[in-house]
Length: 186
Image 1: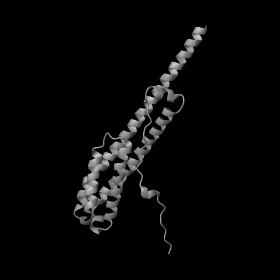
Image 2 (image 1 turned 180 degrees about the vertical axis):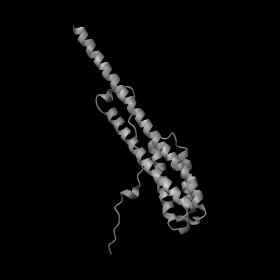
Image 3 (image 1 turned 30 degrees about the vertical axis):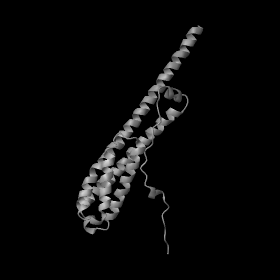
Image 4 (image 1 turned 90 degrees about the vertical axis):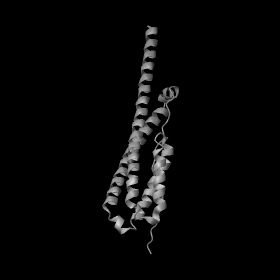
């Protein structure tokens, strides 16, 4: 009788361990799926950059440095497909910043601002930015769930034994968004 109880406890512990292991595997897969979604959207944005540069190049002679910078950043990002989120995040943040500067500069060129190709590219880039945000939210949610499993007891015992690791969050924040707006009332 005692042997059956001990075997029952061992079987329950093994089943519990298998269940936790499978949850960890699922969580890791969700993180990888989320990262893949971000990567797809970032590639879409990168593929629009040459079209944008071509559309504005003739008009924006004074902003040549911006156009060269965005081209250089795009090339750098294209070479980082296997980079970790932290490294990729830095380059993508720079791309977002330079794209913002280009669209601010477009406002200074009435002919360019009214150009249908530029308007279409702006609209496509705005949609891709929204898609990146949605993919980022999904990924970061999967990362949160994964990290909770990896760090919480008792799943951390299985995670440590099988070398499951915490994942990194991916943030594309504009530092200017965090600044308090200046209001001039006089």
